[in-house]
Length: 138
Image 1 (cartoon, rainbow, N blue to C red):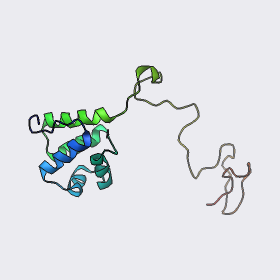
Image 2 (cartoon, rainbow, N blue to C red):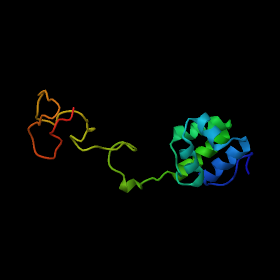
Image 3 (cartoon, one colour):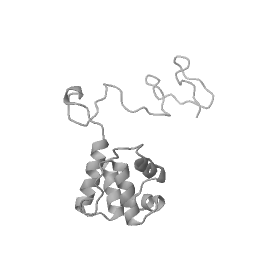
């Protein structure tokens, strides 16, 4: 142990030891940190090896960790986050996913493109190919 912090590099084991040292149950820590009990249990078991930074920060705050301990917990979490080698990363800003042109978020409940603003009543079919959501249900 270094400065009261477990020396293990495994995030889940470190989190479990810190929670036990603080005397908190999984339910109490999950409530204080604003994460679900399931997510916390998954982190401790190693199913989630590299949680997001804001989750680790919330856990560190709920556990009452000092800056060094919080940094150690974040470092253990960062080791579990998969990183692509530089050659495999797509061009552009690092960490930003690129979308294909015209592949914006799907909007449910809207008429398919090209149908205009035709008012549709329940059960009235709209023009378009069969099986493509052209039958109004609302």
